[in-house]
Length: 310
Image (cartoon, rainbow, N blue to C red; front, side, top):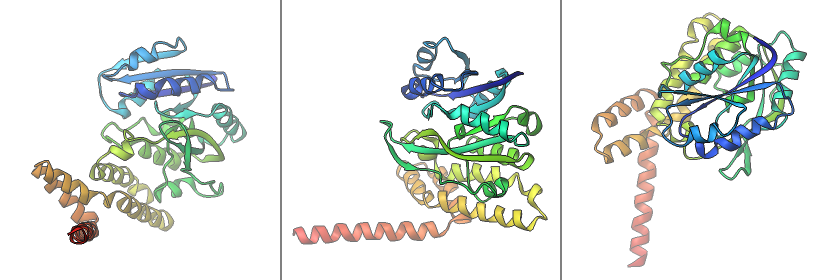
């Protein structure tokens, strides 16, 4: 283990379009003691070409196994005292590592430190703040149970030793494996929120949270949360937070499942439509009513326009 070194792990799958900017944002850090490990998870674009332009980047190729496996590979190959997982389409603020390291040095009892991000468009222009300043006195584990998630993961700087205690990323979780890790780490270690913006989070059509199927997002997110039940059972506050978080995720992803059913039916994927419908009826049946009302209004508006034109 290399003392004071930050291992910046970049798992990458077909994200060469933004990769250059992501790498250069790390190279521009005011904190200079870092290593960059880029794990190409079987990309079919020119990820290798972009990554190997930079002699500072340790490039690793593996067959496509998913982002959890790519992050785990980076962890195994890393040697830093600290670890941050940087998305290949995000931009790290120049003082991000310095803020994180200083925060952990100032709070030696904490296993991780985290801050905020700004949402940006494809062209890098900011349009929103995804996280509001946090009350640093709050129980971070409880906040995570309620449905808060560190987005993107590069807002968090971990001590490497936390993964020796809680284990690596769960490869069975196709998505939300970062949420699972956040929960496990926050359950085992205190954390510190420095409330400073450290990352520009690029939102575009290829983001997993945007392009991901709502039913799949909900399934794996609830699975990540569900793994915590044994730990929270018997603690009234944690149980309440757990239930609140479950409802949060159901509301967030449930509203899109009716459209997913419709899309599957249109594509004649009847088995998939039935599967999603079952999930919808179990968790968010009101989504069918909302979808029906919206379709009715659209049809009614179309009829009014047609009637006015004639």
